[in-house]
Every structure is written in C-alpha cells, then in structure tokens.
Length: 169
Image 1 (cartoon, rainbow, N blue to C red):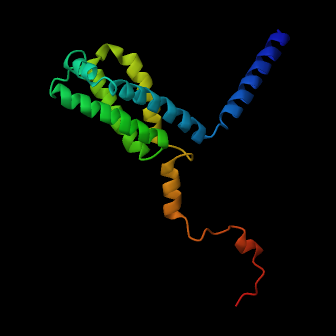
Image 2 (image 1 turned 30 degrees about the vertical axis):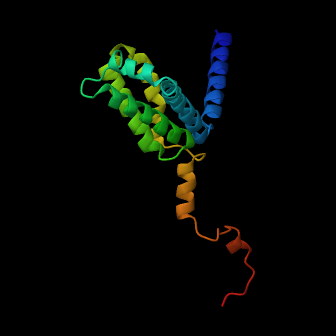
Image 3 (image 1 turned 90 degrees about the vertical axis):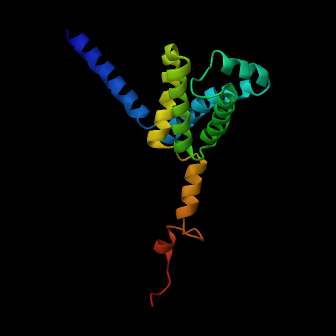
C-alpha cells in the first residue's frame, strides 16, 4: 500500500512539474500558432478559388449557394474576405478585427452552406476566438505599431537614470 501511495505522489509531482513548465509557454508563441492555423485554412481556400474562377462561380451557384446574395457577389466577397483577412491575421495586423470578420464568415458558412460540418467550423473558430480575446501577441505588426505609437523618441534607456552621474542642478 505504501508503494502505491508513493508512486501516486510521484506521478502527481511529475504532472505538477509538467504543468509548471507548460504554464511558462509565452502567450506570444501560442498566438503565432493560432495565427498560422487560422490563416492557413482561409488562405488555402481563397487561393483555391482564384485559378479557376468559372469553377468557383459554379460552386457558389450550387453547393455554396447563398440565399440572399447573387453567386458572383458571394464568390467575390468570400474570396476577398478569405485572402485579405487571413493575410492580415498572418501578419498580425488589425488582427482582432480581421479574426472577427473571419469568424463571421465561419458563422455564415455554418448556417447557410454546410451546417453539418460544425466540427470543422469549431476547429476553425478556436484560434480565431483566441486571437479576438487575447490579441496577436508580441510577434506581430499590431504590437510593433502600438510600441512605436507609445514609445518616446529618441528611445529612453531605462538604465540612464540609474547610471547618471551628473551633479543635480
């Protein structure tokens, strides 16, 4: 019985150490993966539509038929949203807004086109929700723009005040 308790405590300790290490993964690394996974789905779809526009229009007249929109307009809108918003998400530029627009596209696809494909749509939505809720992370153009907008110029060295040896006036 003592051996069993010790092995359980050892397993719990190993699990606790693993969780401790996983908690140290920076959000920026998670955000990069979320941006890559979300963008890849929509970029592949958008780039698949471009080479054979006749096939794309045929799909939007048939399988992808939108009840309130002409096929040509729906094809142009969907392909534009997929390529532009996914490209912005990939770059981390206007990330939250672009992810929200893509999430809206997923909602339209789910409700009007393929309601039975909800498991796929759920997988597409998860990284989009993460980006909407938490943003694109430090490795993004959004972060760079925010940093440039709030940084003082010339950049201030935080050690300059500590190392300043000049005589106060």
